[in-house]
Length: 310
Image 1 (spheres, rainbow, N blue to C red):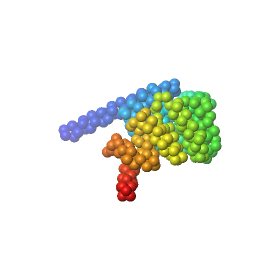
Image 2 (cartoon, one colour):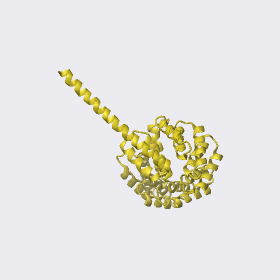
Image 3 (cartoon, helix red, strand yellow):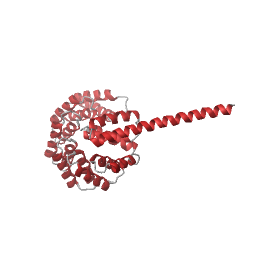
Image 4 (cartoon, one colour):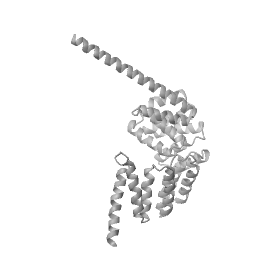
């Protein structure tokens, strides 16, 4: 009798597990079907919302992060797109988990630019840069005004050690799609590497001007760091203060603002900015917590030494 009861309990547990797995499979199928439809039709804001709720309900699945990354680039949420890249590397480092879905979508829609780009994401994480290049060139031939494709292609050329071609592609992307901000960012970085600070400054300023919805302050930060390279710390402070008015929660802007203030010799204000930023993230797992603590310790020592001189 005891064995019979145990067997029945086991059977019920198996049945419950099967039902749960069936429900989860159904939810995944529904989500990926909806996401694919939105992607193919270019409905980026809806894709952004759907992928966000999908991530909340299934944080360990790679698929929603790929769609979210796509939507972030398409809607100029550059910071968040980079964050998605990091999460994908943690969940699907070689692109193998998501690849079958990307291949299936491309097979059914070979002439859709966005299906080609989604497939290149998986190929990129696998390190198949020649395939990525081929897919992006096809995507651009189908949809030549889609800016993010040029960004990805420029990255590939940089990996292939052709920096001149990379910059050429970025310039073409800006010309074809002047409202995709990522290309200005990448162009600015390329100019900085060539020590062409004037051209880099123009790129960041143009991106700030075009970011009407204030979805990112990456360009403010990059422009500020460029000013600091040129010892124009006051200009850097002004730019970062504007960034923090737009996104007061942006810890990285606070970190760089403190750096600029410290470079100007305004130790007290740097201390105030860093301390306030640390309060915002203290006790969490924010990557900037250690950096802020280190800066504050060094600053405390400098303030003490300054006091000793007096």
